Image (cartoon, rainbow, N blue to C red; front, side, top):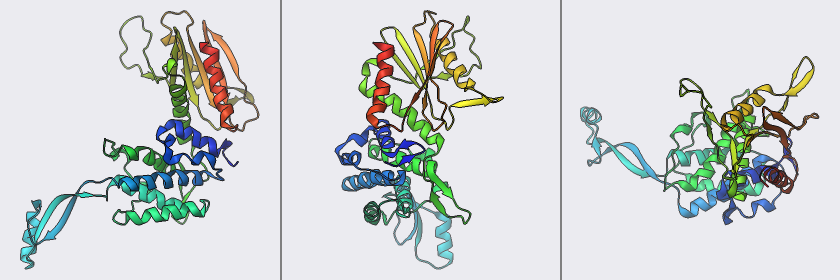
Length: 347
């Protein structure tokens, strides 16, 4: 199976199913049986099924502000526009009103992403055909330039919750893969950028433990500074990626997705010092009893580097480990690695 920077494409799908559990619904049940040659094809499969399902429910509508010249009053009168019409001897009123419309930001993002995938030749023809068919239902929806999308204006509520996973996939594609050629044309890169993969990797590990080990109470935790007094003014917040807790023991996992796990100084390789400092700081400040019940782990996504050591250190009474999760393996083996971590620390 083809890989994305050393990660099996199918494993990216499995990571997405944990990050966005709606993918476990029957709408998407056939995807995990398919083989994908590239990540574009995977995303096209998810969106084609998801948008087809959304069309059966109906596209989300919201009130949008409209302006029009009308013979009868509607909404609010635009006085300056109406006076202008009067001067020009036009027997119409300039009105502003709200109308329930499918032409809103959420549907515009879906349409733009579908158009990008339809143009991508690495997407299988049958999937492009499904997307083209779906696009017919977006005739009243405007295309929006990818660079002009205001993601901060995307808000979810009871009436549009079904869009959440779809738009997250759209954002992975647009923010994580979109490139501009010298001619100013848009095309998709062959892989997700490191920043997007890092967030997905972290979310996957967190949701894996939440689903399979609820007894570990997996959460990102805020770590309070272990101070001698109450003066914490100007101290930065410390928030873990994943904290697992059970029976008085705690494991802080710092999930790291880098192209290179090691750093080199004067031709000598070592673990990245900033990462070790960070997890050590989390551990020492959370271990308020100073009894060694809090451990830390740097869990790297294994990369193509030849030298990827693992190690355990006893630092001032606390265990700090450095491990790698091999995302190029079949998913059953990835799951096995995560299970061994849970067993080692909490059994």
